[in-house]
Image (cartoon, rainbow over all chains, first blue to last red; front, side, top):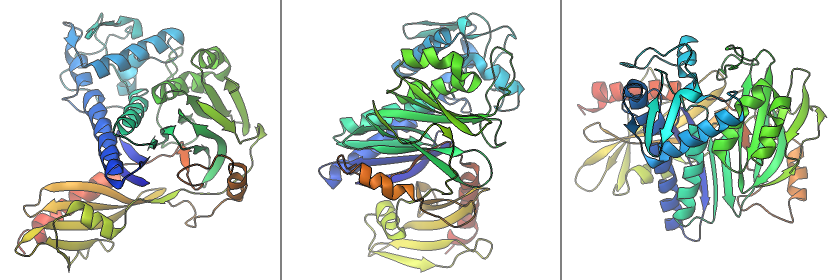
Length: 281
Length: 162
């Protein structure tokens, strides 16, 4: 077994692989970290030379060609936006910049205040914005990076893989992961939730710790009012990552969405009680 | 996807724990960064960074570069990392050696861990029972970025002329 951690996707990326030989383990590990690097380079909101930044600068003027990987993530993002009626919305970049969470992209036209996910048109490998908007894949690309890292390690010959990018994780092969939720509040309290095999999990929280990422409820345009911590289990990490947002806003309303994608959510509410939504698994 | 639930629904028990992981030893980091090196010669560090350790990587004839191991401390975590520089001061690699949450300082192993080992004996996880995947962990990479910037300055100021 080989495990390494590097910085990437704005967090600590931890990868474990097991393979018949040390050489295969080394190759699988390198392939997995390289895959994470490619996703980061293509889909970073912060990097001016990413595909995403090019879209934000130019896709409102003319259709832009993107890599198959970026097109696949965007397709899933738009599908989830439609399925969640906008509770998950990748056009949230403008609002997050306005909220001071993300830096304004240089040279990009000011987003139209009325722009939303329906203004993002994906046609094969071409992307066009009907109105100026700032796309942010921060709510799904980290999960996708975990998925491609896992796939890269398996393709390189690993028999078991675990990838964990700051709480977005996936496991495959002959291994199981004990997934724990951080209980919000003072000190380090961990709640063991489940043993996971051949699947993914992602976590998010709101209103419980000022260091946690910011989410905006697309219905109200403001952060969700109820403090919650959620962990979503799904077949793929991109799904788990994206589904944390609708669950964070309204777990009951997101339950059908979880069912539809074969996902399950553990929700720790302000009453400090744990609830489960979606697939019973 | 296969899930086996562990947590009971309802009131949450208070389990005090923190995550810590060691990924690479200093020796492993040295060999990984400079596989051709025949010697790692300890070098003088920086009085302003007490946690910093510096080695010069050499083969039989020349200096291959430097390995700098340093620790940064965030609000709730501590990261030990190794920065490898070639002889000209260009970054060869950056590896995380150790990650440790610092809530309360002490790392305690929760009692349920033993329980878990027993219950999973029928399907022993290949990586062993000490796997901890913590959803919701927060980590600021800024501390490490700042640390790397400081180490590059230290190289320019002190190591480049040695």
